[in-house]
Length: 101
Image 1 (tube, one colour):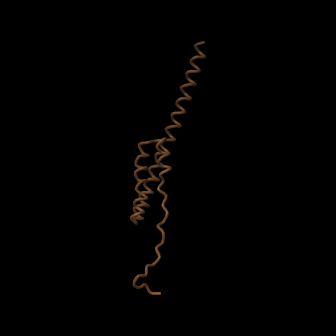
Image 2 (cartoon, helix red, strand yellow):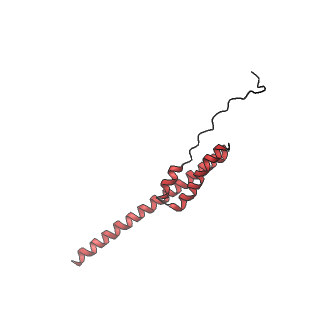
Image 3 (tube, helix red, strand yellow):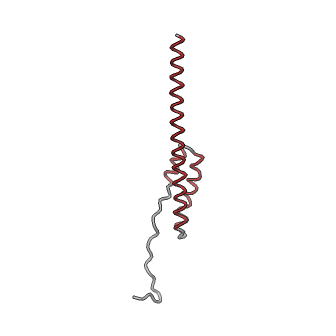
């Protein structure tokens, strides 16, 4: 069947692209300086999809994922370092208090 007057080919629905907003918001609690660009990029995905800019939406999603992962990794490392420092501090304080008594 040839497309003619009034005939429209069926359009496929736009591809589903995860904007990574959830991971970006969780990343705020670990290391907020890198989570902010993640949230900004995540908020660009849906508007880009609505105007048909699939490449731009995918690029924004990839950037959001990258910033979120960096924020999570750095945040987890900093939390672990902080916990280790507190354990060492309490262990040192406990050993000093027992040696004084």
